[in-house]
Image (cartoon, rainbow, N blue to C red):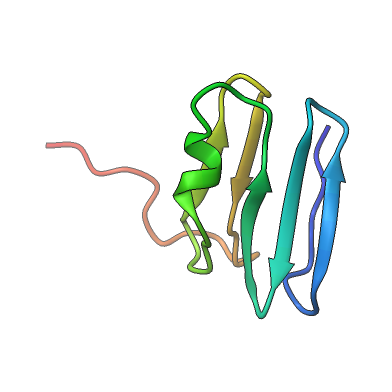
Length: 78
């Protein structure tokens, strides 16, 4: 399942996996609570910059900030 979320406005989103709540506030997003064992996703805190991610492996959730524009670099190889 893929869902795009507008970071404008404030809201709380209940995800249909586990007991997971995502909060959007003031142009940023975070995992407010999760039932996963280590809660690494919760401890990541707020993200707001394009390219930042929050990952919850047990619940199979990835939250990523995108700009909608194509990235200038995809990879660098030496």
